[in-house]
Length: 288
Image 1 (cartoon, rainbow, N blue to C red):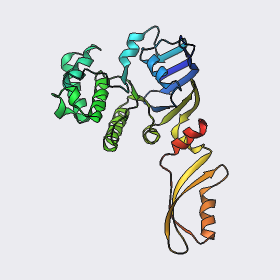
Image 2 (cartoon, one colour):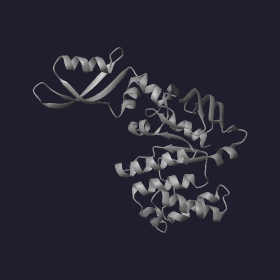
Image 3 (cartoon, one colour):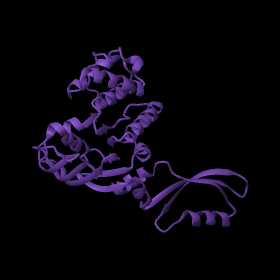
Image 4 (tube, helix red, strand yellow):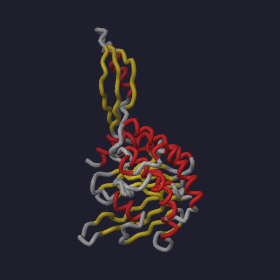
């Protein structure tokens, strides 16, 4: 089943700026997708249209076969969104922030309390449930935003820079929670500037540039087809000295040929592995 189907989507603002130039995109239910692009690529406009904050100029958008024009209420009920900016009442208690959000979607209060406890425990916030929002750290506020977005059990979760301002330890904890949501069947679309995050978490990637999709597909396929691959190689020189070097191979060059070349020079390859963030190389390649 298709979680999202976008056809010929355009958006031109009153200033004349064309934010979206007729994009087409289909994402399957249960998938997890990274939406990438430099500032001004159109990512924010796309998310704003999906959430009903911005009206499209042309084209069609369907979320789980519900059209955003003819059935906007159904679409909103199926989407949970975590924006970049914190937009909850900072003087409200953590538990109340999540429970009250459920009320906007018609979730019975008893059910909302059960769901809130589950989410706050999963996100490590249960001990803070009676604290007011303003007392939380930046990482805790980010996790609170995720709990609030999920309280009505949406089928599609939109994450706009979920790791912004979050330290490394909390970031990895958040990754694990997103994986759990995905494993439970939630469709996830996330924007991120941490391309390592996209490579580690996502099955699909969509790269936008100046209002158009310039590359999309399965992460593994796109990385395999990248013109240049980078590796981290640990070698032992003929002198016995061990070194760690970075190697980039372009079309027509193979890892085997490179290893054989080193061996012919008397250099032993102890270890060779892909560079952790190959997606960054692809992103820079298509945006050059």
